[in-house]
Length: 198
Image (cartoon, rainbow, N blue to C red; front, top):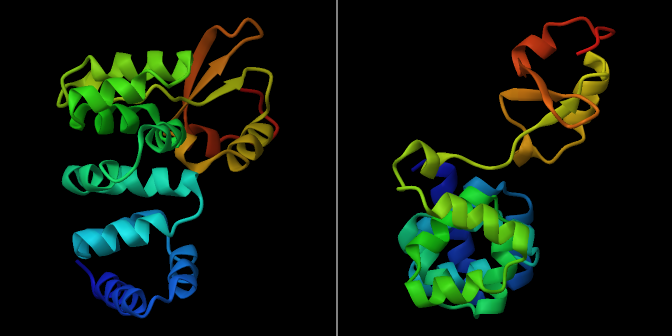
């Protein structure tokens, strides 16, 4: 654990004891999700849950939750009702949601699954069917597709406008019928001339 994480955890602990929730929110807003998760790892259970509940954005909560280890995910999951957990899972990548659901007690997991929409449910259940340490258990169902008519410049602009967690090392090039016509690495894309068509 680095010094920055320790300092941040100490500061948040002190602010929590003083009830300075606004200051904690400000600190969290200035810290990236993986670092917030590292800070939560250090805090004792009650503090971890209190700080997690201070994060106003459920999308951000979901991302931070996906960075936590299994034990701490379970602590937080047991504090929330099924509706709140369904909402958080809706913001998670399907592979992270499947991992979390796989760690929950069966009854709670089934209750949560029953409230997901059809597409989310299908993706998550498919990923949950694989053993955790198999290739299927480690994969995600999200991938990056770009139309074959795009130029390199247009493709880069599209990628820059996307959510960070959807960006991968490979781009799947598709035609008008949504059929795969090729695979391109990000490196290949970046080393090509801007006016070249995929």
